[in-house]
Each structure stands twice: as structure tokens, then as C-alpha cells.
Image (cartoon, rainbow, N blue to C red; front, side, top):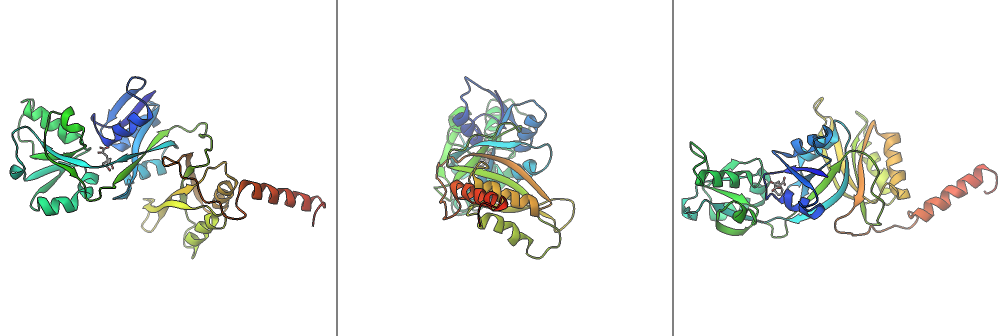
Length: 315
Ligand SMILES: O=C(O)C(=O)C[C@]1(C(=O)O)C=C[C@@H](O)C=C1
């Protein structure tokens, strides 16, 4: 299998990919950003992509959500969680007191903002395309492979990247939230839906009817009345006009669960656009609370009763 992911080597995304397939059994295809990783699946250069979709600090990863919300349909097949803490690292010979400009992925920067404000209040952020792109540049500059000024003195990198790129750690365990976790998903072309495990998640993109008071409430009621809990919901601009938003939703449960199927049938009846982005096992294996009257058996029994009523066999 060929896996596209955010590179170069040593990103947190690669740590997520390693949980899915070892480099001995899979071909790793590092990409410059998440959009390129997703497009690599669409245009057939990769079989699957591993991309960040949500973090405890920033919420949804908008580049991923937007790439999946439109364009050729893709589905999520699995999720993986990676704890995220950074090391501030530089080329050998550089000390913390020399650091004026730090290169970091924007998501890394926001995850370390308070630490930086406290320890290095005057440093300037130099945005990077990934957590290891600046590490690779620091290594090449130290080896004399680059001409001109690098533009930064240090970088926020995943701890393992310090050795990979021959850097010197200046500060370890850099993170405002020691419990920070990023959630990654495996993205593939539509095909068989992973079987239900009892602890699953279903991801959807939903557009609401235009100019309809209460349309958001009506959409949410499709889940609420069936006892389906949502673990994430956020709005993203559709892009064709101001005021038009799509909703990116993670619902607890699998499309094979009667209550989830009924909820998304309700969405299909009420909403102008629904994109099914997959049902897949939850990484934390937490099973949903099944409320009274919303189990599969309850739905099957209710459907049988209606069939009997229609046939004149029940009242
Ligand atoms: O995978 C990496 O290392 C990245 O640079 C990406 C990314 C992200 O997109 O959220 C991954 C984990 C951290 O949350 C910060 C950045």
C-alpha cells in the first residue's frame, strides 16, 4: 500500500502512519501539505493518506476538513491519536539565548504560545509547512548545503526529529497543554465501509436549507431524537457566497447502527446536501451510551410493528 502523508520524515503525522502500517510493509510518500496528501489519493498516486483532522488545542484542522468536504468523494477508514509535545531545537552550537526567530508549523505555534510568551517573549514566528520541514533545513544549512540566510535560528519539532536531523535540544516538553493530542485519519477512496465494532464514529458534511429559521436546530434534532451524540461539529464556509456554511460533524456510532442510519436518513430528507465521510472504529474504543428506545432491537421491533399495522395485523 502507498501512503501519502505530511512530511518530511519524522512528523507527528508519520508517527500516526507508523501506528497504521510499518515502513517495512508500506510505501511512505511524504507530501508538502495535507491537501497534497489528500489529492495524491484522488489522482491515484497513493492508495491511502494519513492526515491530521482535529487537535485538543485548535479543534478541527481546516485544510483537511475543507479538502474532504468537496471535490471527488473520499472516506475515512480509521482514526489514530498521537500525543503532541515539542522540543525546541537548533543546529549544534546555537544556545537558547541566541534564538530570535523560531520556525514552526502554525498548529505547533498555537500549541506552545503561552510557553513562548513566558520564556521567549520577543521571538518572531517563521511559519513552516510541517513540524520537520525546518528541522531538515537546519540540518542542510549546518552541512553547508544551503546558500543564503536561513531566516530562523531554531524550530519547534517533534522530540524524535532532534536525532533524525542531528539537532541540539534547547528546551524539551514544550507544550501549553501537557495532555495535547492530535487526531489523525486514514483517508481512502469509497469502497467497503469498515464493519461496526460497537465503538465507532461517523463523519458527515451537511449543508442547511437557505434562509430557513431553525434549520440548524432541525438538523440537530435528527441526531437528538435518535439518541446519537455528536463529538464534533463545526461550521466552514462553503465558499460560493458570504453567509453560506457547511457543517462538519462527527457522530457517535456507525451507519450500520439503526439510530445513526435513521438520523442520516432524516438529514437526507431535510438538508440540500449530505456527504457521508465514513464510519470507522474510534481510537479510544469508548462505546456510546444507548438511550432507552434507541437500540437496534428497538428500531427493528418498531419497524415490524408498523409493518403489522399496515397489513392490518396490529393496532
Ligand atoms: O504532523 C506534523 O508534525 C505536522 O506538522 C502537522 C500537525 C497538524 O497539522 O496539526 C500535527 C500535529 C500537531 O498538532 C501540529 C501539527
